[in-house]
Amino acid sequence: MAQLDGIGTGGIQCALISAFSKQWREHMYFGLMLTFQNPSRWSQPDADLYQEYLRHIVRAEELGYDHAWVAEHHFDTDAWTPSVLPLLAGIATRTQRIRIGTSILILPLHNALRVAEDAATVDILSNGRLDLGVGKGYREKEFTGFGIPRDQREVLLEEGLEVIRRAWTEERFSFEGKFYHLKDVQLTPRPVQRPHPPLWVGARGKKAADRAARLGFHLMGTGEAVQQRMYDQALESYGRDPREFSIWQIQWAHLAPTRDQAWDDAEEHLHHMLTNALPLLKAAGDLRSDQSIALPANPKDLRTIDSTLGGVPIVGTPEDCIKAIENYRKATRMTHLGLVMHLPGLAPAKILRSIELFAREVMPHFRGK
Image (tube, rainbow, N blue to C red; front, top):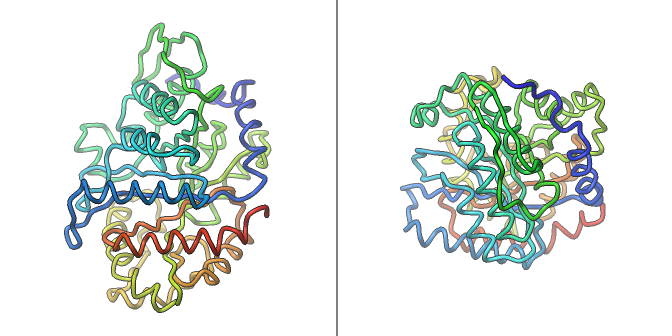
C-alpha cells in the first residue's frame, strides 16, 4: 500500500484549509440532509417524491440554509437513494447559491478515479459549490452485493482519498497501491474550486476520527460529542490546529408550533427509521457500544428522550430546538449542522413547515454567533 501519512501536510491542502476554515469559523452553518427514503408503508411514486424534495431544497435556498447534503445506501428496503452524485448534479441545476454535498458517499464501493471525475463535473455544474464527504461504509449486504471485500474497506478508503486528491491537484500522477494501480493519469476537466472541493471523512469511533485527523480532512460525525474530542485530540497529536478544521454533525429534527404537535407528526416516522437502522448497526459490529442500544417498542415512548443532548432527535417547538442546539454547542465544537427533517414517510407539507419554522425562528438566533 502506498504511504498515505503525508496527505494534507503539503501547501496545497493547507491553502484549502485556510481558505475555507476562515469563512466557516465566522458562524454556524445549517444544512438539510436528505436520504430520499420511500418506505412501502407510506409509499408514493419515486418520481413524485424526488421532485417534491427538490422543491424543498430550492425553498431551503430561498430561506437561507447553507447546505443540502445527500446520503448513500444500497439495497435498502426503504429505497434509500443509491446514486448521490447524479442526484447532486440535478440539485446543482435547480439552485444558485446553496452548497451541495455528500454525507456520505461510500468510497470503497466506487472506483475513486471515477468519483473524482463525476464530482468534478458536479462542481462545474454548480459553479464551485460541492463538498465531498466520504466514508468506509458498514452495511454487510452492500459489500456482499457489490462483491467487494468488507475487511479491506479501510485500505480502499485511504487509497481512494489519495487518488481523488491527487487527481484534483496534480497535472499528471501515477499511483501504486494494494487496490489501485494507476499510471500517468490526467484528469480533465478540473473542478471549479481551487485547489479542490472541500473533502470530509465520516467517523464514529476513535480509529475513524484518528484517520480523518491523520489524513488532514474535515470530520463528518454522527452526533455524539465524543467524536469531536477524539478528533481534536488526534489533530493536535499530528501537529495540526483544530481551529483550522471543520466538524459536521447530524441531528434528526422536526419542528411544529407545539411540542405535542411535533411529536404527533414525527413519532411513527422516527420510530420506523430507528427500527430499520439499529439492527444494521449492530450486525456491522463496528462499535461495541452499538450492541447495548435499546429502542422503545412503542413509538410514543420516544417522547421521553432528552432532546437537550447531542446525538438524539430534536422534536418540539422552535424554542425547544434553540435550547437543544445551545446545550449541544456547550458540549462539542461544531461548525456545520446537518438536519434530517425528511423523516421517511412524513408528509411533505409537514416537512416543509418544519424547514420554514427552523429558518424563521431558529437560524436567526445563531447567525453571527
